[in-house]
Amino acid sequence: MKRKNLIVITTLICILLLSVTAFAEPTTAETNAARFGIWTIIPPLVAIILAFITKNVILSLFIGVFSGTFLLQLNGFNVSSAFIGGFLDIINRIIESLSDPWNAGIILQCLTIGGLIALISKMGGARAIAESLAKKAKSPTSAQIITWLMGLFIFFDDYANSLIVGPIMRPITDKMKISREKLSFIVDATAAPIAGIALISTWVGLEISLIRDGYLSIGQEVNAYGIFISTIPYRFYNILMLLFVVITAVLVKEFGPMLKAERRARTTGKVMADSSKSAVFSEDKSLEPKEGIKLSIWNAIIPIGTLIVFGFVGFYFNGYQAIMAGEDVALIELLQNSPLSFVSIRETFGNSDASIVLFQAALLASIVAVVMAVAQKILTVSEALETWVDGMKSLVITGVILLLAWSLSSVIKELGTAAFLVSALSSTIPKFLLPSIIFILGSIISFATGTSYGTMGILMPLAIPLAHAISPDATFIVASVGAVLTGAIFGDHCSPISDTTILSSMGSGCDHIDHVKTQLWYSLTVGAITILFGYIPAGLGLPIFIVLPVAMVAVWATVYFFGKSPEAPEKAKAA
Image 1 (spheres, helix red, strand yellow):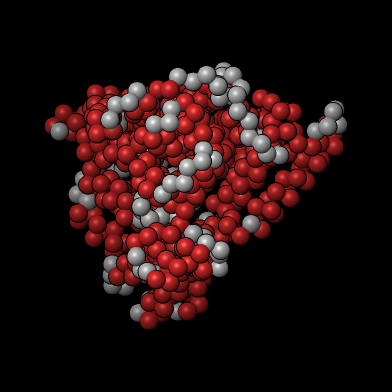
Image 2 (cartoon, rainbow, N blue to C red):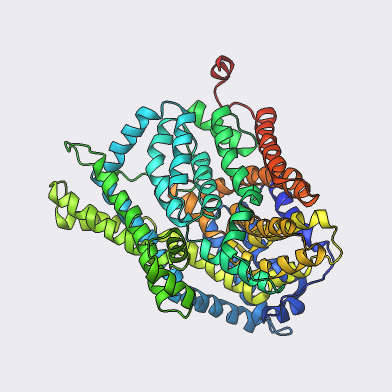
């Protein structure tokens, strides 16, 4: 392992540990946080460091989970019984993770989309759309911009984004000699960052709920959705990361490990490093289109379009049923009187179960793909079903990784890792530094736990009362709320144990550790700009119409002055 990677990770974790305790979360985890203290960070730290050292995500996650279950079972010096109990506890946690309806839905969604992509490939749809897009993607720049635009188009859910964009765009980016590391970065950078700020998405319900509860804790009843919209300009990381992707593509400049990966791809044509492990969605010759069939982009557009359309429809009806079965009279009346209004659609999306909806949409899209393959006599029914199952097999490893990641999350929660990190926040905070400190705290908790949702739930009840206590200014509180929401995404974006990070690398056919190592430098760079040119000036009271443009210029200047062309020397000179 390169020492600089260890330094980066250790620095992130230690920033918080140097502070003084002030706040504690009154949950069951608080007891374990007080009991184990700094040892609570061992499971995520072990998993993260081993992932970089061994390049084996499954082994790293397993040992990380075991280190946590071992601590929980340890009572005095009963090492042998803690060892056995810890191992048995891992089995129980994996079973519990799989039995959770949300988790089961996510795994079924992944497997089904894998089968759908296999059918599209076998019918020649993937190659047809790749050849069609290749005509527009005449350079690495245009290929990256098209990938970015596709990511923005699938704004409603980060999981759907990660699993759809990568497989579709991979043949095009491979042809343009864009590294798999850069492809997976673009996919990841347009997943949670866009879903987190989209006016209608599967994230909105949670974010609005947390905002509402936070304001109620300081005795204020507010329009939570209005506050959510007000935070968007203060979601600096989300906005700047989306801009960063475009700037690197347009300027044709990279830096850090990504520069090395892009130079390898441009000069040698190797889109993956020789040392890379075989990735999910790896090239499978058995899924090549049948010889002699007529390639048609509709064999891709119709199934993918079905997935997206049914996804939207499913979000509405699933959320509609959840609201109508609930006790919120105002919402029920709203749906009865104005079922198709913007507010109604927003509320139904926010109350929908994304894991179930996307599985249902993927299953319907798969059925459509099977019917199309059989109707065109490309495949028989048995061949189509066999292809679908083969495609699902390619994502079994993703299911294993997700189960271990969820098990690690449950261990971390029980140990009180987040509670311990939150308790490290100092009680004497200068006003102008509070949004930055909230952003850093959220990023570290999210990085260590691999979950942005959980981090938002932990920090929001603390951030709003704290911001209000320091300054009752409405804009200051909104900036602090934005820091919670975007800090959670920043840490999740960096974390190798995050499910969206895992899905982005797998969907793009990139070695997971290669994806994390190359993306980490870019995420940290944008994160630093977020603090220096975003939250510190905002905390000082500068208006957002000045702060945000200046931060955008800072992103451009960073890439322009520190980036280098990945092209061959003669091509770079000509450019």
